[in-house]
Amino acid sequence: MMESEWEGAAGPEGARRIVSVELPGDRGYDIFIGPGLLYRVGELMPLPVEGRAAFVITDANAHPYARTVSGALSAAGAGPVHTLTLPPGEGSKSFTHLQKIVDWLLERRVRRTTPVVAVGGGVVGDVAGFAAAVTLRGLPLIQVPTTLLAQVDSAVGGKTGINIPAGKNLVGAFHQPSAVMADTAALASLPPRQMRAGYAEVLKYALIEDVELFEWLEENGHAVLRQDPGALSHAVAASCAAKAAIVGQDERETEGGQRALLNFGHTFGHALEAACGYDERILHGEAVAVGMAIAMDVSARLGLLAAAERERALAHMSALGLPTLCSEISDLDADVETLLRLMQADKKASGTGALRFVLLQGIGQAFVQEGVDEAVLRAALGASLGGAA
Image (cartoon, one colour):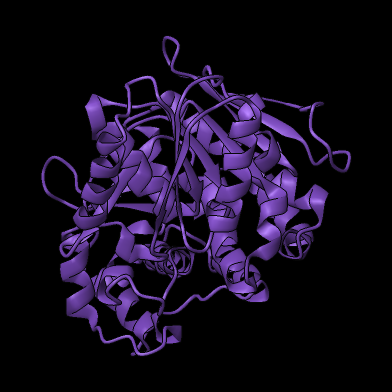
């Protein structure tokens, strides 16, 4: 992983970055970070553009940004530029919409060298990326994430997929993009709730491996949420650099590999999302935040995480407006048994079938634990749901 200043972009000093994801062979790629990138997608494309078709996939929320990207591709000589707009929300991560995308691509005679450009949040990136992975056995993918969560997490690393009733992202593929273009100015339209949800993933990187980043977030977290250009760019670049380093070591989340650390909070969080039917009662980042809090509770109950460390992390989450309890989720119709059942369906089980949990020994000190005493899990879930601790 390498990080450098990007001198070509307009914007405040310190708000421009390139993070490189280093992978074997020629599969590595750059993550461009900074304001104004939507207008420069065509010139920054790592693939030939002039005289070639392009396929832009977006959703209704990000459609204005997709128009800008389409214009930038046309200005660079691409043509024709086709655009498909999906409904917003997790419901678009389905077999129905996957088939719609694949049919749309094939009807327009997509070629194996034709880029698919995903413009939007994590939902668009995941389903468009999966379609790119399976259509003609693999199409080039350009990720243009327009939410903080997508810029710091889902657009980087090559995981794509859809949801099914049994769980989140249980059907998918690893398909690395050819480039990621994270326009931080695009975040200006995000509601505060969406910014906070994305911030949860930034905090995740600090909690699992970087106490210095956590200390920086304690001082600058509010500046990130109010989108101070320098603070926002630093948070996105630090997150991407952390993920790039892990992905470079363990691209496909091998048994016992480092990439499993990125699932901190996710086993619990995915169960909460499934319990809510992937609706707006809880956003992915909010579910991860609650999941991280439960994982820290489990860590403390096992005698791994000092109470002071746990309280410090929880205090920061609360100060930034992140949920830390299941009881904060409106109309959550789930109990301990429901959440345990949904967790068992999660894909993060070891070869023996035991669930793997990412736990903390301290801020910045995460590790993977195979199997946890069910009584401890029940107690932590019960406490989060509002029962006795």
